[in-house]
Structure formats: C-alpha cells, structure tokens
Length: 155
Image 1 (cartoon, one colour):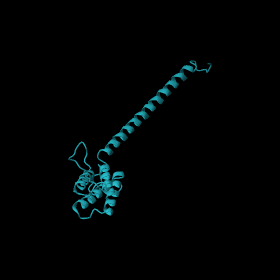
Image 2: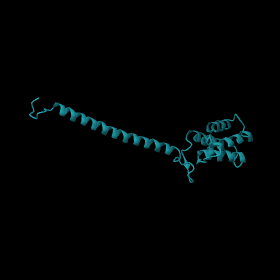
Image 3: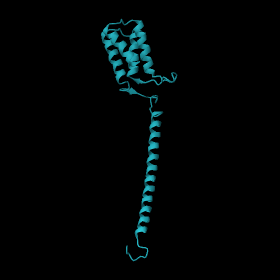
Image 4: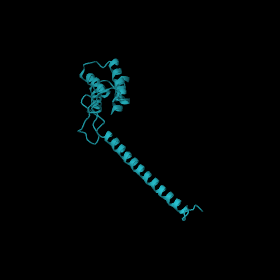
C-alpha cells in the first residue's frame, strides 16, 4: 500500500494525472489504510501509528479537503513524505499509547527461543557431566584391571 501511495504521489507530481478528487480520494484511502496498519488476518484489529505513514495521510487529506492548493511544492512534499513512509515507515514515530509495542508476539517468540536454548544448554551440561562421570568410571575400571592383584606391583 505504501508503494501504491508513493506511485500515485509521483504520478501527481509528474503531471501524468490531474490532482482531482478521484486520484486524491484513492491516495487518501491508500495512505489511511497504510496509517492504520491492519493485520491481514484480522482487519478489525488496527495499530494506528504516529509516524511518516500518518504524515502522508495528513498531507493527502489536506490536499483533498482543499486546505492547501495542489501546487508543485505541496506535491513535492507529498512525494517526499510518501517515499520516506515507503522506505522507512518507523524512522520517526511516537507511540504514546503502546499500540506498537513489539513485546506482544515477537518478544514472546524470542523468549520461548531463549528458554529453549537455556534448557538445551542445561541438558547438554548435565549430559557432559554424565559423559565425564562415565569416563572416570571407565578409567577406574581399567586402572583396577591393570593393577597387580597381589599388591606387589609386579605387572
């Protein structure tokens, strides 16, 4: 969606399409969906972001509402903001309500992975201890086999 918004902004800047209501409405819809960041598996759960995606949405709304004239300067601003939102959407962001906290699923995944590695390393340490104990028992048995049964050290 961010790519589509950037392409429409470039078409508006280049003059290949007129900055009329149809293209501006399409741009507002696309940038609005990109700003809300819905998950494709649950469209009702949105994560609004205060970042460059919202800035491109606001500039598109201002152009659509007629608050600013669609001159070359504003179209350049729109192109730059949508381009930056496409390339690095979280480059500048404010998260006052914790909507974009990555601690929900991704952190749990990494925590599970860390726990798994910790259990695996604990298992391997105990296995190493068992192997070492087995080696010591084996060497003790060999030492007993190779010692003199009479105790006079004549081998």
